[in-house]
Image (cartoon, rainbow, N blue to C red):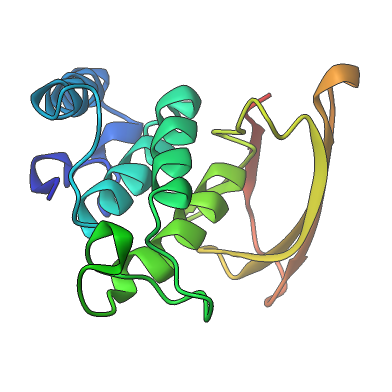
Length: 171
């Protein structure tokens, strides 16, 4: 569990307070060190860590924990996930939905009136696009990017008229 990181995810305080952000980064580093540089065998722990790392905009750590989750035999052929690695337990929806949540969060961060595209883009995602991501400010976002050309674009479709949104790009 990563309850000590609540101010990063599901909270937002780490977005505006560098002291809190740095403290959570240190806590995540200590958590990994406690497991010998690896992750806990229960899928919900590294899944929650992935969500925190995405919110902290720590792409290297996010990529490492996602790689761990996707190569430690948590997924069943149905794409549902096991609580423990190597299918040693029952289904666990935390990782089934959390992995997708972390990926979405790495491509689009939003809060009331703010959208940031590509805040935690993975190094391996040099070029791509995603359509239909929903932002918290009642807006749908379609994002295209090409890191090698330093290009990113977003098409935003608001659910309401006069929806004022600040847009940032993490590239």
